[in-house]
Length: 435
View 1 (spheres, rainbow, N blue to C red):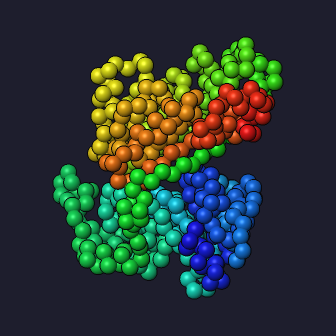
View 2: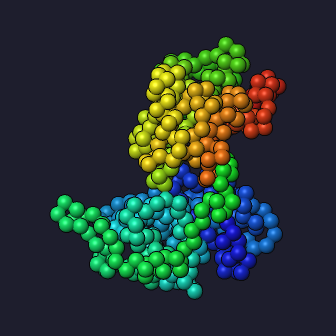
View 3: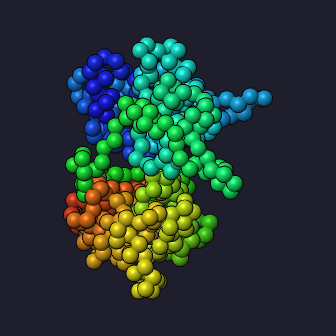
């Protein structure tokens, strides 16, 4: 945001394109609103809105998901990329590639298309516009080779455009069974000089962010049918779906049923929708690429089961901790994150089972699939990744269904307020997330 604001003050930037993983778009929306100092107009492929309000220059932001931008559509004998063409016609002055390590494969569709898009735009721009900024916090398992494709997008003059030439000049492979394994690099002093001249590395302690807390929300849109069921349950204390009837005897039970519905499961464990499961999968897939470990807190047993399988599916070494696991298995799980592990690890907790007397500073990411009921459980769960041995910033991510009790519960927790008092004060407003 500072980078864009400074260039805007200099009169060099009026349009900024942010290419990010789809799951990160809501995070960018919140960060623009929070940190950008000038008036800005934001838009995506679906909607437009105004962001930060202030004096100074006016900047337009376009937030685009990486996956949809470079998706190909076959028309006759040709492949077209309609959304990529739309962005090219928009003519941004700055392109920000969030999670730029996702463009590390030189032959990948995203890396190729983004490089050619920047090249075409620069034919019409002045002074090497659009400027390209790469953002990443992910290690490079293949070392220098993983930097070739992102740097080619940023400026093809730095490392060249042909990956075969780059490999011939700098990469040394093994022999026999290791013939496709990189054993060393040549000319590393030159590569180091070039990379350092065009990049900046900041560690958490250098930035004063060690053990600093960050909170973010990922809004979840319930399917239309489920949202209709939710509103029926708010009004009539019951609703029907293909699997049967969901009902509540009083306002307190209704609140629990609504929370279950937001998570996607009934009391019996039947799945009503998978909106939160998909969001968890997308978000944790990004964390896996960043080699980050994560704690996931769920409220109900069916959510713990679904979240555990989701974490395994994205390649995280996964443990489950709830009332069904033995004391020994619980200890094995918590030992895995007492310090930073050698491979990305996840623990899926039922809130009451993992909110006290644990130090899990091996992780710096916490995801709340569903919010806890009590402030003590919530406060204690926040502290699991904190402590004197934590050297990194810690982030807490909430998956919240829009316009539901999810929002009200988290607002109460963060304000240290009594959820039940608000519920009975104005039930409809509370249950629709409008407190």
